[in-house]
Length: 437
Image (cartoon, rainbow, N blue to C red; front, side, top):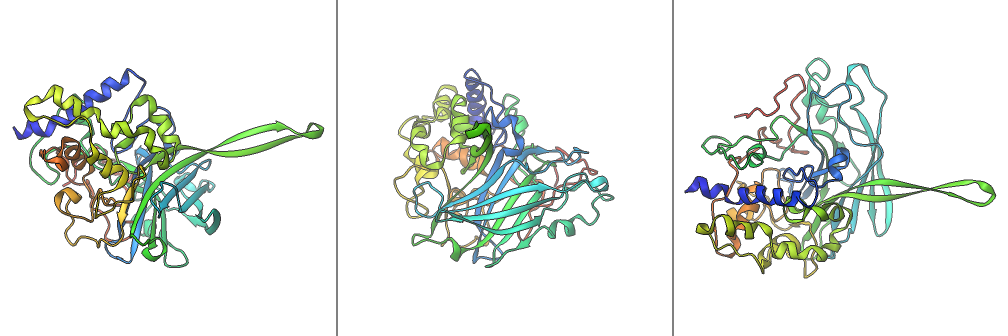
């Protein structure tokens, strides 16, 4: 019974993905890895996950993190993974609940000339803080650590990585560079017609698809006082923009060039674009801001997964197919008396800055009685696949089921201090897909 229950929503997700293929190509991987047709062709712009949480070792600060470039193979040289030099990466904070950024941190990267066997993995970057319509460069010439190539190319890697943490004025810290992908899930089993591997052990019996793979992370640790509001609730999301260059012929035959930036990726809550938004609308969703979410509201209130659950597994139903205001609260308006931001529908990670870090975090976050976890912000160890499955299954409206994918933790322990995401495995170790105890 438990094994079948744990596979219910995953089965629906797999069938839903198959059905959506009819509308267009889709190679989605949770949490938001390769989730839309166009962004799948542009990995350096692909935002994979966003996190926002009270810093456990510095509770007077909030940590904001976003990751890019899904499925980095640490051994993929000699042209290793880097941030794009032709993109703008942004982490945004809404302080008023209108789905528009009140404070943004914008990052631009340049690549140093290749050094020995390190290739081009060390980059320099700038940080611009935008508030009140004005941008101020708060740092420039900062460096990323090199990618973790191996013990001969990058010896003492933890020291190299630690040197990538930079102090900014006012008590803010910043890090940008390669990290072990902190997201976890048995994605291989899900897409093999839900061949769930159940059992016991450190991770619950499943195999972490992301084990051994890396991402590129941008992380900020900001004093709470810099972002706090009267309600203590903020909304957080990340974007990537690409330049569009227009050349026009001006007077006297001269050519003039104008560059505009176009948003190509957006991410707030995990799994939204991947699971809820139809494939034919995924690219459009990526191009819009959270304040435009009203046009997608029907996909939250009438989730296709609930309908499929009723068709495939009526013995575990009924699953509520319409009027899912519980999902609207979790993803678009916030949970009353916890992190509600008002009636405006906007997909953002909502974080109540007044909730202290948990002494013993529960991987199921709010569903597990831990108010410091997702959907109140999102910590690295929050098991968003299991939480989302149980929420769609009806956990918040009187229909709890022990849904899950059998992977309950990351393959590598997180760091105790900023930037918290673990150092990536080295290319020399070549651990891809191996489950670590």
